[in-house]
Image (cartoon, rainbow, N blue to C red):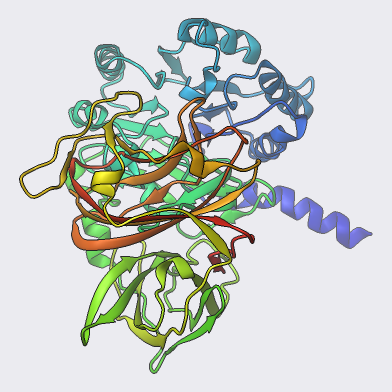
Length: 563
């Protein structure tokens, strides 16, 4: 019994002990969480409660939530959030709380204005500040902005804060990261935010939105200013080219100690209260000088080493009735592997032709890394009586690639337990490609027969092919030639009214990679839903559809990857 009490006490005190190693007393301690997405059930706020337990043990002065507090403005959810905080602090004084007002804090009732929703949000969560505000706390300026803030208001508040405290950092509480700074902000970030912030090196932007993880070193960025993404409480997404978004559970929070000459930021798991990599906290030295930036992506990439497979590592492939099971021994790196770039080649007329890239999630955020990685290639990628080669390249978090390993296999007759409900070898003729989400305007073709794609386009299929009850499963195989810019596209099967996606986000590979095959597994969310293929986000480019096949599946999909 005494042992249990001792270990419980140590678990509670360990974060405090670790912080005590830092010389001097911090002027202020601020905790950060984001994308809490609480809902109508009280248990949806359990991680919020665990986060505040951590913050109480560390005696933080303030707590920042970088937005998407609830999922589509549920007043009950905000009550759950407030009840979770009250359960931790009771009658004791709670920390000061700052919130970014974000898009998921707006309800689906379009008769209610954004201003009204935010007025109710402020009331229900008992927030002291407005969606746009400038607050001086313990001598430091905190600028809070809503997701849809105007450029004029955004810069006006920053100018006021910088003018008021020119010799101190200004903490910007935002939901949207500045464009092409932290992880996945090239697509999901705001470029006008970056343009403005580059004028003010003392600004430190804290954001959410992209659902990353604080275990990812790309969640801190330094250039002409500093940007930090808090990730997401509950789950995080990995961006995988040629594949659906992979998700893992997440319960991480950031705690920042403010000193006169530096900011020290430590990352914690809220459930266990353990610190992630306590020996290497993120440190921003003050005053900030961009030329001496520690977390410059260029500098970190130059200093990093690639992950490597052990000598004589091999890829084993077992062909089964519904696809191929691939196994290999994981690559080695002290920080783990960010992802494995998987490229699939088919032998055509004696030549290896690359026709698919389908990245595999790595193990950089896993403590006990499995020695063997196993994943599955479904029959949508395979043809009968063909020879295939698979190339696997380990990639470090800063983008450096190790040496690839290869495996070869052959197929016999390939069959799916399915019914083909639609197939065309001439989608450009048989399937209209329309502009945006609602327009009936056909996207123009260039002289070579490619659609000149700007932002959003939808490929239309016959309504009758989607017959079936809720959870009817379909496989959509798309062969297309995309001539993309630097940013990826997203492929989504979408029902138009109400807008509902049939699959998780599915990302294509940027650049011009010839004809590629993408296989989207999905299911219906309602018997009435009919789907089109939506291409959105990323860079403008050109696309030509070569072949479309849609199957109604008779069996459950096999999970793509087991890690």
